[in-house]
Image (tube, rainbow, N blue to C red; front, side):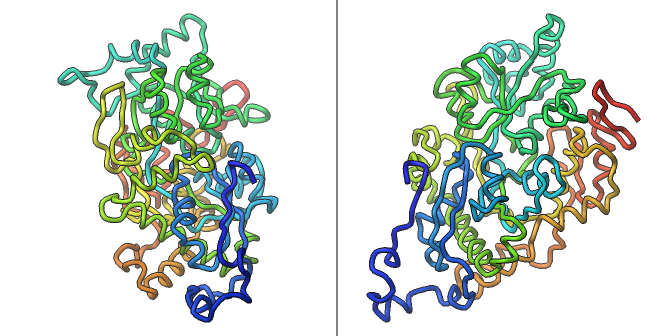
Length: 466
């Protein structure tokens, strides 16, 4: 199957059921038998990023097998290919950008009803700029004991962007996909520093997002980010790990901020399946979510004691395929900014703590607000639309059913799950611009943001109009 495919080679494949002893049969998960799996051979897609870890760990630690599942993991070329694979059935499910199920369901780009019952992680991204841009920014950044004071505001970048504009030069930056967390985080950071990242408009401009822009954001696949930066095609980018740390190791760029500093404990990736798949294979879906919950627990348990083993697994070419040292730089609780400036960031990657795996409606709504803020949702929507859309895509009911089964089996603790939650987090205030986000009031939140579409505004081919 090549380096991009991992195949589970189990007793089922090697010997066949007829050769198994009664003890071996009995060792199967009783719960998996009770679930009466509708489908047990599955193919899941992923992109080569460290936050695909729950899939790799569920495979490597045998959690899929425990549920009676025989899984193939296949790396995908880019996010569009991955999404198309889930929609057309080539993939049973996939490691997805949190915005992908939402964007597809509301018809931004490909129209299809995609759902998620499992959030894969919190945090995990960074924004990196080239050495030359860093040199120009650094003069605008406060210093303490010879090191930059973090978090670094995009206001330090604004004079650089203004200079490029005055010289008639485009200031190009990269992100991974129009509905990616990276796009919205990069835009959030820029806007918080007084830089307009541009709007999505009608027609072809609806996929570019550069109307009225101070910076021109474009799509670059994650593994290609460092090379694109080194070639000078872009001056900076927002991406997941290990591709920020790769820039440090190669000496071609400097990560200036992590998404933890933009929005503390922000939701990142999800595990997505088509709604039709979920309806056709409900027990199989539950079994998958169970295995992923256990993988997330393994990744965070005992203060990340398993992270070094996880790094070794992820460094394999069929998973992330980056050097162990590069992956370890962020996965083991540290993050390196300017070369030699290594700082403790214990929560840079969170897979289980803080209810990381629970698919909160309020997380979905934040992504929808950003789609509206930048014109991907072209017209105003009432608060009820945001709530209804979130509940159509995010499925905490499926998640909690899987959690309850694991609790009954003694594999997880009840206190690790938000029993009694209505699906909304408490208002969150730890954003870089100090704006408080309340998922129950999306339009009130949008009204607080200085740069972005306001009530009644739409985007035309030339700018903003009412």
